[in-house]
Length: 381
Image (cartoon, rainbow, N blue to C red; front, side, top):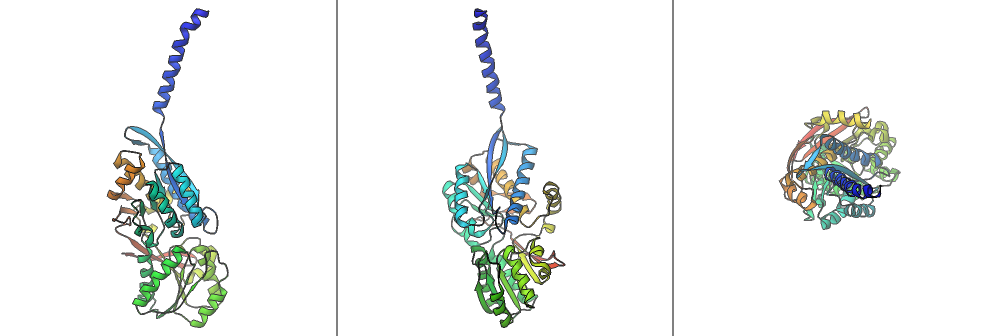
């Protein structure tokens, strides 16, 4: 028995080694793509919406199967919460670098996207924001920074032009939430409004955690502006519009994409009927793949799209498209393939200019009827 044992041992060990080697050879390479948005706080519903879009893309790609350079690849979403806080944003950005992600979809807010972008740039990791609209993001000279939405340099003027040409506004009161997004959008609106001959009666600042706007609104009521422009998110824009209605302010309220969500009616009640807002991208109903995407999204998550889920969805596919063209999962080679992007997805065709901005930006304008968001117009910039 002892001799038989020693004769069998090498065969058994070899068989085990062979089997182990076969298992390793057939194992998929796991490639991580990061996503960052506020998953806690007042705009967590927007952050989760963005994350859902990215998650759906990764699930679909994995189901179809992905092969890069002859190797089967499984994508893994690495989701992080920046709580819409710039300091936390840089911390989670560094965590994603340490996690060795090959690309990042995010962040949601301009105020978090911009400080985090330096960390991704230093690490050589492509970053595609689906919703940060402050022009500064892509003006820093970082080769890693991209976005799939228009900027406030286009969104602000579109709102001001609508105020002048359609609403025939001659005067405006402006309020912003003092964030990189809210203030940036309000400033771009103000520049265009003045150029169009609209008189700016006042420009006040609040903050992105405010809940009581009655003091500012009481002052604005006395100014009697034709329109009020609010730069901020729906978590504050909703109460702002609601309190304006309670104070019997008749002025139409203009706002940007941060306010222009499906949840606004929950936050503002019937005051939504006095709101006109913009989205820094094509309307869902106008997107080539919008209807089909909406059905898949609702089937998967059991809720309607808030606003930017289609943009995070396409952003994941754009990173994978660069991966395919580079025939590599190396972050440097993926980054090198990004400038030549010509991707056709839910949003339509996406190409980038030399700064990382989309070549054919679109601004969509909405109002609300009975609390339901309704498309007014789409403007190619």
